[in-house]
Length: 144
Image 1 (spheres, rainbow, N blue to C red):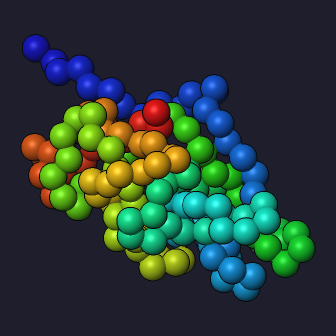
Image 2 (image 1 turned 60 degrees about the vertical axis):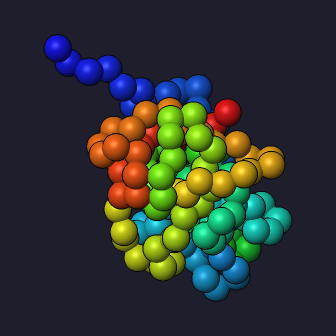
């Protein structure tokens, strides 16, 4: 019998925002950064999460080469679900924060998350889609 698991879906009700996407002015994110975890880093601006940061969203799209006020714009999803790779053991229901990020402008597959104690932006593991829940497992993460 087929196993049911919560998956990522393209939901119309997901909250998506258009924002500046750069670690700092002149350090724009690009198409290779789509799918990476982001946090608010400035006025109307999201940048990449560092290891241990609370996750505010993930980058969904980049508008290239258009620039506004010296910044590239992109779309950030701030709720619902995304796929990730665990860096340590996390059980279903366990809270997570950003794991080790890939370098800016470098494609690196799924984002990494680790067990953590977020205080404001709460994300938790809702399904283990590949593996056992140990480091290296693929999971579905959902905003609480």
